[in-house]
Length: 255
Figure 1 (cartoon, one colour):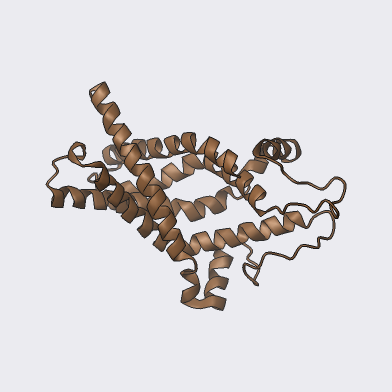
Figure 2: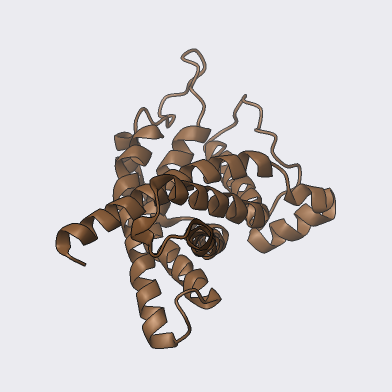
């Protein structure tokens, strides 16, 4: 699943950050409130996720199907069995058998999970950035060093990952359940099911309720350290690069 992710991440990220900036400007001017108001950043982040998921969700669908499939045993594989050798084959097969709608399965679940993440992420990031400017004595973003954006992005990504971890956990388990169901279609399989949760989830809300019921509050924190580390690192790099490029283009264009 590396190929589709690497190929689609750049345009999806461009849409993501551009939508956020446009939404932030619009809400500041039209809805009212200061530029650092809660609703401005949270809603702008939510909007950015909604729009960019037009690319992110198909990427995730292809990546998910390729990651959860098992390499077939040449001795036991049945004629006609489906196994994606590469991203191109996965994409063409989904288009042929499911149409474009096949790429957007789980679109709603993705928004429920990553929509709040993006909202909290940009909310935290703007707060951290204002704090960095105040303690560093920077008059504007142009005066801020690259490492300052990195630290702000890392703190915001880690904080958003912490707050939304239960949503992401349930979404992941739903994806695994769906993947197992798809792999078992068309006959029996000798492979053991991937043990993620013994309880079947019907949807995000049902998953959250059952997660608390059977695993308690501790269940909400399952995998949170790894998630905070991953998003803290990845969002720090992406937002710092975006801010640097944005300021660079502003200088060139005289903005």
